Image 1 (tube, rainbow over the protein chains, first blue to last red):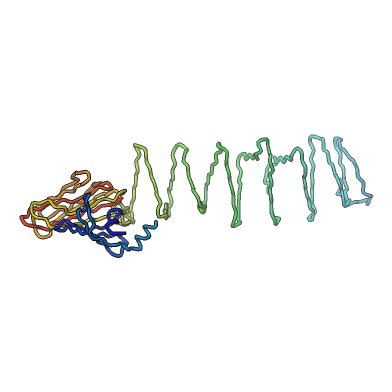
Image 2: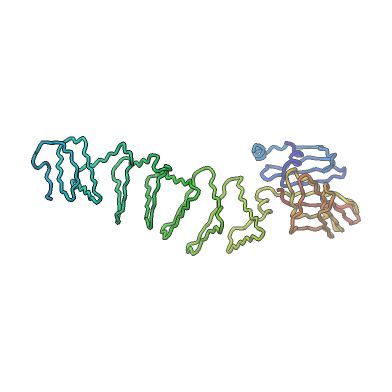
Length: 69
Length: 333
C-alpha cells in the first residue's frame, strides 16, 4: 500500500509535515510496530485538488497481518 | 413356636392350596423341594405382621417382579435410620418407566429435615439437574463450610445469568482475615465489558485504598494500544502572514480527540498567534499564542469528526521570516 493512501485511509501514530515554499508538503508517517517511517510528497494538502508527487510503498509484516484480519 | 429344622420329618413334597382366614394361627411351612413353581400367599387380615428373617450368611434373595398390572407401593413410615449399602460390584441401575403417575412424573416429597449426601468419587461423572417447571424454587443454603466452595466452569458455549428477580443482588465479602481477591479475567483480544447504568440517579462509588496498580485513562490506554496520534509540522513564514503549520484529515470512520496542541518559533522571539481550524466546518476550535510559543494541555478534548481536516494556522510578527513549528496530540477512536 502506498504511504499516501495509508495516511488518508488508516490511523497512524506519528505524522511529520514539512511545508515547503512552493506549496508542497513532505509528509512522514509512522505507526507503532513498523520498522521505519514512510514518506510521500503532496501538493495542495487537505484540499480537493490534492496531488501526490512522491509516494513510498509500505512493506511491513505487522501491517500485512493487520490487513488479513 | 420352636426353631424349625430343615425338612424335619423327611416327608415327600406336595403342593398344598392353603388360605388362612383365622384369627390367630401359627403355621410352620417347611419347603425343602428343589423346585417350587408358584407360592401364593394371600393375607386378607387388616393387621398382619409378616416377618422374614434370614439368618443364614449364604442366602440369596431374588425378588423378580414382572407383569404388574397395578404397580408396587413401598411405604416407609419407620423412624430411625434407613441405609442402603451398595457394596456389590457392577452396575446399579434404577429404571423408572413411564407413565409413573397420571402426568408421567416422579413425585418425591422430602418433609422436615433431611440430610442428603451425594458423594461422587469417579473422575468422569455427569450429574444433570434439569428443572423445567416455571414455578420451581431452588434454594441452596450453605452453612458452616470448612474448606470453601469452588465453582469451576469449563464448558464451552454461552453462560448467562439472567437477573430478572426484583430486589437487590449483592456480593458481600466480609470479615475475611486473609483478604479476598475478586478477579475478572478477560483474555480475549476482542472482549467488550459493557457496564450500562441507565438510572438517572445511579451512583458509582469506587473507593480504592493503597492501589498499587494504576487506573488508566483514555490517553494512557490509547498510547499503550497504539491508537494515539501526534501530528507535527513546520513552515517558514513571513512576518504578518497567516501560514498553515499542520494539516491532518481524520480517516473516515474515526474520530480525533485532541488533548494538546502547541506551537513555537524556531529561530528567535516574536509575537506568535495560532488557531486550531476545522476546514470542513469552517470554524476555529481554539486559540493560542505567546512571545516565543505556547503549549495547551486541554482539560476537555476537542472532537474532530472523521473526514474533517484540522489545521494549525499561525502568524508571527517578528518583523522577519521565521520557522514556525506546531503539534497536535490526541487519540483516534
